[in-house]
Image 1: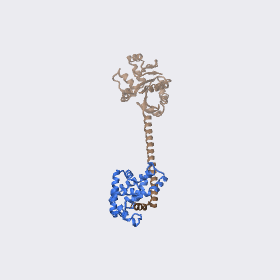
Image 2 (image 1 turned 90 degrees about the horizontal axis):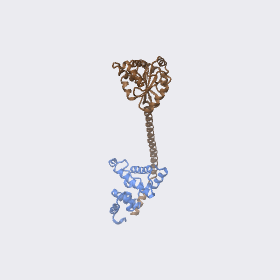
Image 3 (image 1 turned 90 degrees about the vertical axis):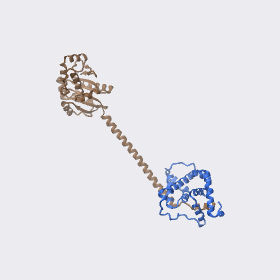
Image 4 (image 1 turned 30 degrees about the horizontal axis):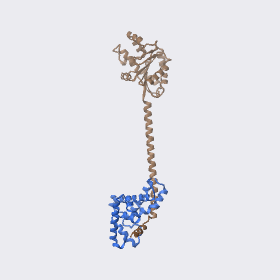
Length: 254
Length: 161
């Protein structure tokens, strides 16, 4: 029977038709498999590229539109410039009507802050105000000491050619309190000093005063005059050319 | 994934073995064709390297048996009657051998593959135990019982096993 079993099983051969169909079927499946694999990988590539693009877009947006520094400029127009890590002005905020007129007149956004300060300092109305013995204060507000000093130094260079212009540095914590009162930082500092002599003074009054008027008001306090002279405070301390910024930094007359 | 050349070589070498195993397990040509194609597709998509041709053949036997068993266990398959069930498998067996074939097919399934591997492929019990993943003693037992059953069915000593 052993032999007969072998004979029987030998009769069973895979049909040529069956082999042919199998080859065709495998070829078809191999093509589908390769296509699916390619499609799968292409999806991965698209997903990775899309994610990369999103990271670049959101990361870039975050990097560009996160301010690292605020520059507060007060004369009578009071404006604040927010500066990003690329030294570009990303927003301009005005704190009074003159400030609004100035921001409307000048194209400041997305420009280098030194160019913007030059534009402001060379603006006709500002030049006229300075020539009328008005006082301009430029306050750099930030947290990064080295960076702030760098910016401060550049602003001082810009302001050097202009009469009655003072530069200060302040920490960013103080700015929130100024904004809460609707004042730019330069006027807020002046408001605090005036308030220490006159409790009745209001932020609204200070908001619409020019820096010259504020300074004259401050000069009206005899003790203040003494203090300014003694402490070298930036306000009304023109001749020294250097002074402390209300105890928080430093000021320079140019 | 294997090359077309490798696949064609494997079909030429192992097609008959796969086909015979399908015949042992399956009762209709459609199922045979399905299993036959799936076994070779699995080979085509597989990247396992074989030590030699015997190793490759053992892989085909194992995969074919598993595929057949899976098909038979499938609920849909066990609860439906294929259209071509009544059709004979397209294999011509000489009338003299018809009784032996019927006797082999009448064996319980667990004996059929052992009988095929031992009497046709000439595998020893230890080799069969490796291929089927069963204990050697179990294979010996299955072989002994299948011989006894076949002897009984075929009329005692008329066929020597």
